[in-house]
Image (cartoon, rainbow over all chains, first blue to last red):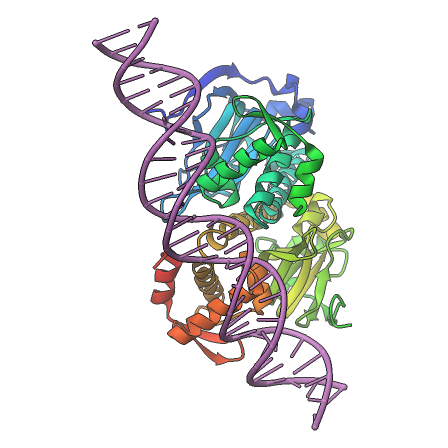
Length: 235
Length: 235
DNA sequence: CGCACGCTTGACTTCTCTCAAACGCAGTGG
DNA sequence: CCACTGCGTTTGAGAGAAGTCAAGCGTGCG
């Protein structure tokens, strides 16, 4: 019952004009008058860990801006396994493909409780049609996604399992700059790195024993960045 | 001397109005009047196998439409190895990132002699600013690239080397529908699938011995699609 | 003719997967 | 309060896959 259910709490209608993180979201460049073009409500939602924003294959009616938390985009393989294709952090947009008229290409699952804004497709389309100021930002979001996808491939899918796990830690570190980072369930780690859950677990356990990472709380780590970088590069 | 050199022949100024494959390129929806907005020449080039369109890190001045042939986008890893991130076929656009104001994120190398159109950044930017008919197509190209990137990850980077090679054959088959396909150098195959050159070679050689694929000419194959699909799914 | 380069093959090592079991923690119910 | 249970993590042992290093082929080109 917990899996696949949408566990979203409606927080109210978003006031984009006053958005605290507007500088890094899709609407960054909009000007006062542009907001009058928004004729459908943009809702703000809180989604718990384990909740989903949308399912692969659904006809898309909205994209989502991630305001906080962490969201995984997964695709399911023929053999039933999942593959995590990208992690979305605050500022990213999930479901861009609906703006190109396609159904959702992934299932978006929340890994760390998230605040998101639901952007109805029509709103974005209208803005895109009527104000050029959205173009650049929209292009930036596409470009960001693509760069992330390529990075994912070159960083997290090459080298030994050891190197990949080390690089994943370094990636997660970027999120919360302060030398601490929250890791994911071992199954997710495996689905990101194309290794089995066991290999993921063994490797993380090894890092803990070596003192390269230290678990300060459940799945929360402080890391030895230098040593991780050595391992990431191949010792 | 052969590597890294741009081996391009200038074929003349492209006449986009009369383009034979316009229905599948960026300018698909443009109307008569829109072409007057093109104030810089769009050149058509022929690039030989081994030639490059651009190098990773270069400040981008143009994107390229692939009219024929096959182009690989590669990124070089810290250890000097290359990683092939995408293959571009006719209709794809290389170097979209320059339209978002970024330097090239890959090196674009021609694998099979290609005809390309060079689209100066300013031309695309002006069109994008002044005619909404480009928006949709531009978004489609971004969307295509991203879908391709995700597919790459899930199809060609999961499962055993055997499965990956089989899936690569099936991918290449889509290109030239008629049951025949041209394979790539073994090193490239390896760089696509994240396996070593030797493993790529062994596996292809195996397929040949099993009769799953038949080499009809240098690196040109006819394939047994059904059996390949079985292998791709894991026997 | 011989050299270079890419493909193939072999033998050996190392890594990762597989299958299985044990562990630890949190929530449930007696 | 404590035993029970479910779930994710950890660990082990053995099989199998891929990497490594090295050598041999074959073809095209100078």
